Amino acid sequence: MERVWYAIRVFYRQVDPVRAYLEETGTEYFYPRHVVEKFDRGVRKYVEEPLAGPLLFVRCDAACLEGLRNKFPGKMAPYYDSVTRTPMVVPDSQMDPFIALCNFKDSDLEYLGDDAPKYHEGDLVRVTDGVFKGLAGHVRRIRHDRRLVVTIDGVAAFATGHIPFAFLEKVEDDGSPVG
Image (cartoon, rainbow, N blue to C red; front, side):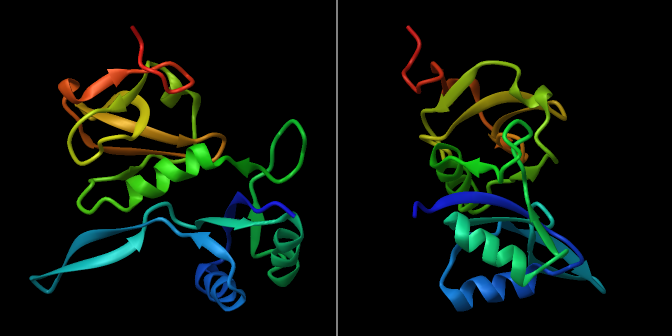
């Protein structure tokens, strides 16, 4: 069977047991995390924390996903396609840039919450220079700063740090440059 990416919401602080099970079974998954600066009694520490709370992505076939649901009943649920009422498949064309974006150190990545239509407005662009070179997404002004927003349709939206306009080129939906 074909392995595809599924977005899963994990409940009741069960992310660690679900991750342990996925690792034990050799199932590919992606758990978005980032490093944050914290102060504990005046001492600066850098701590790795979940970027999007209980959001986890699993690459597997439908039978594996069903087995995961049976293993953790009531503790996790895949996102569902509202039209077909089947578990939502996240295409590689969305997961690959998202994983690449999460892997940038000091990317100033911010979780914007559930994917909302307001993050789809504007032109599709590709970054031509800098640390985010090659990534594509929509540009939004968030808190008075230009950021590249990468979305996983129907699941979530994430924003990078500031990107100068000189590093952007407008692209068509198929990824080809405009003009």
